[in-house]
Length: 181
Image 1 (cartoon, rainbow, N blue to C red):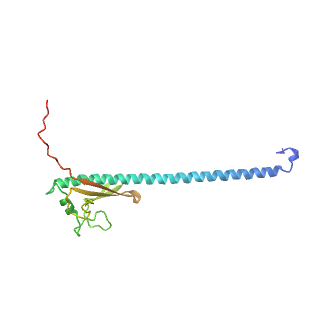
Image 2 (tube, rainbow, N blue to C red):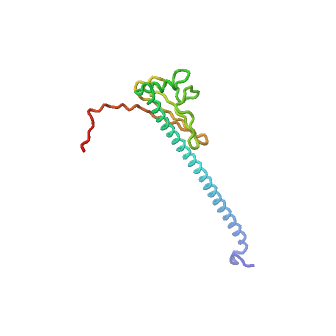
Image 3 (cartoon, rainbow, N blue to C red):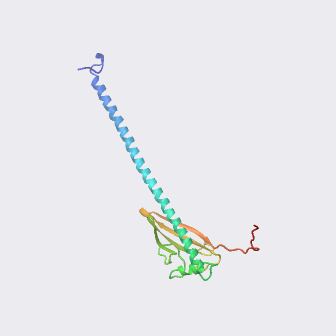
């Protein structure tokens, strides 16, 4: 049987082999810990990126609800008795208490747009008066209201998007427009 070390080190070859084994086990343990750390970090990063994606999806769902609500409000206002004010629209959406609660827990307001499905989520749009006149006030004097779109997405994600809508006052033109041709 061949010896591992010269004759002067006879008797120590088993000790050297044992220390090599211990060192190899230590290196394997360190590599195992590095592997577990890499797997854990990757898993956490995947969860974070998934939550980030869900957050943006539900935010854009709320934006879509706000835009849909703005168009629905424009159509309602065009057919109202006073298109220079949002009073008719605000009054029609008040609940039994005669005030606008907007998006609150237990609101009795009628939403401007009920739960509307889009993609993997839904949105609901509420209408309130702007903050200058008091959000619960159903009488509009300045031509500004607040749309609140509440979006609900997958895995319980939720976003609330508020936007202020104002009437565009048409201004009188000073004279007839003519083009020289």
